[in-house]
Image (cartoon, rainbow, N blue to C red; front, side, top):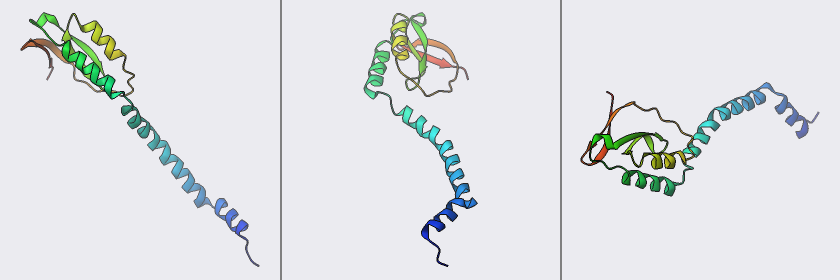
Length: 126
């Protein structure tokens, strides 16, 4: 008796090994796809927009005394915390909030913000 190709294909699909391999492939893909999506999300920022926001942050970072400075909560990919002049804080906060961010930072808590060499600097708790 000669086996047809159709019969051989049915045996392959009916075998337990075939379905085990399919299940393993699906399992591996379910683990890998979220990482691919996260990587894609971190690369999807408008780099020109981010650079423009960083320039605005730098321009807004000026002071004469410690009381001139404020700390703003940052957002990925800008940074955890940003120090700026208190007169510029609301504008810079609005710019930072305009970023569609999907990544997450783990940040050290800031201790204080000081005016050092006419720039606001954040000191972090050790």
